[in-house]
Image (spheres, rainbow, N blue to C red):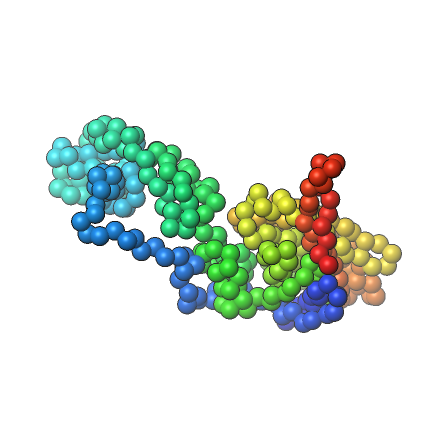
Length: 323
């Protein structure tokens, strides 16, 4: 799809239309640290090596440098390595070049079982201390782990906390930023029968002290293009549940309305899109909404975001609309 033929306008609460420019599928190099500027320097002196640290070094695979988990293999000379790397080195010890065989280092596995270690995201604020064999599982779901860049147009590998990623989206990907909890987008396409997989737009909204990513896409579903809009929350899933949003598109006395909870940016853009968790407009309906001779696509998508509040009397959620 020719991206230059797409027009998108957004408004804050006053619904005044401002120009929003579409974004091309390209990767922008970031000059900022990939970990969002987190300080990973440890204030441990050269003589302050603890026994736990020494054991942890023993548990580091000499080939891939990752932590080793059972089965831990060793050669006849006692050199260890992880099971994944055992196949990579063709059953030869990478240290002494002796044949590895099928000897397990049960003593080191037992030592690891007795260890408790801090989460690798402790420098980002995680206080969790986990048994060695549970540490990896915790780190995959740790609330303090960095977020991946939510930009959909390229395989951007930048990670960081939310403030860092907001600045990254604005400065490196040139994403449009808006304040307010209502929006008004117009999507224009001169030839609606042509669509690449996928054409998309991203806008970031700031309201209720949080950031939200509004995605609008055209992509091929089967033999025909569809158009989809959905919202992602820049935070964890448990926080996302505190908010709701609605999207509406229509014309000629007809309209489609979608209401839902924004998905966390922990869920990838593709995962949300492929689950169809948003407002989906089939091409025939989109052309009907466009009016005229149906040779040009003109869609206006409006919506709002609100925060769910607990009613202290009734115990039910009531919407808190931004003023």
